[in-house]
Length: 123
Image (cartoon, rainbow, N blue to C red; front, side, top):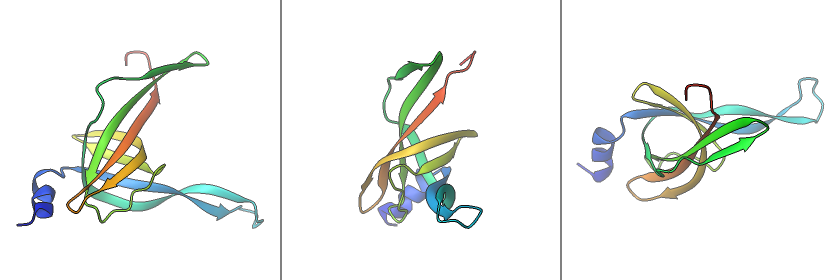
């Protein structure tokens, strides 16, 4: 069995759906374009893992924002681009992430992803 096959069997237990902003005509038919998220890939096998142990925080307009950088690994056949939105289901948890730099290797690709959310009471 190839290394890619082993990665699929052993490592890729999570699932991801990838969305990309697409320009679409305005509803009134004018040439005023708007952006809409379109599904690019659905339910692809992947692995989400920790990338950075620090939890960067930021305070804006009385809101406390938490960010965490993670790593997404998947088959290199998927063209996940910078700024794509990736929704990953990992062990029953849903993560909404923004894709960063993609590093493609012959056997797999690694994509830096970031989760940013406003802190809630009890977080």
